Amino acid sequence: MVSSQVFEIVVKRHQGAIRRFLTSLTKGDTMLADDLAQDTFIKAFYAWDSFAALSSPKTWLMRIAYNTFVDYTRSQPASTLSSTESIQSSICNIQSAIGASGSSFEIRNDVQQAMLQLSEPERLCVQLALIEDLSMRQIVTITGMNENTIKSHLHRAKDKLRTFLINNGYDR
Image (cartoon, rainbow, N blue to C red; front, side, top):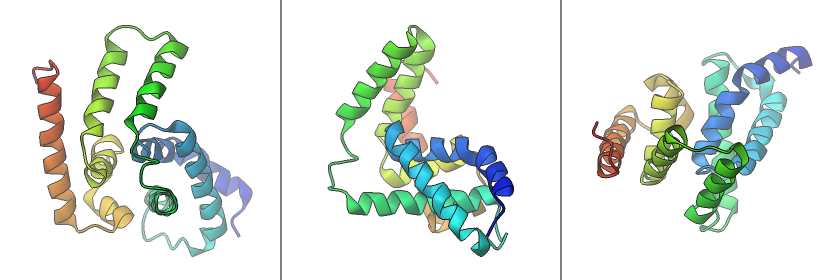
């Protein structure tokens, strides 16, 4: 069993990345992402003895988070995670809560809307490669996908994101 102080350091170091990753997978549902992150860290705590250091702790935690998300989605009706209405209301609530006005919120909103145009595998690959800045090897470890499949998802995702953003007034 891992000492609680060591595990606390691991959690503090990686909780932001895990939450961002899960928020992306849940299409902006921060409450669900927080629940899944908590489940991830509980699973990691009890499985710490199985961590063989063949990858970094972050990669290992991302894999647990991804599996936790997949387990959750399998247990839910198909429509639970596909509702864009809940994402739109979350965006409105965030905007109201922080009083966001102006371009930075609009840009984040546009990027979030662009991300919704992607398939789940494309969104996953973009989140890991471009937002979390993980290596191809780490992404393969987390997702279990073939490297060429990941590259294909990234290529298609970048094209879709570029097209969406250009069609919404961004020149480049």
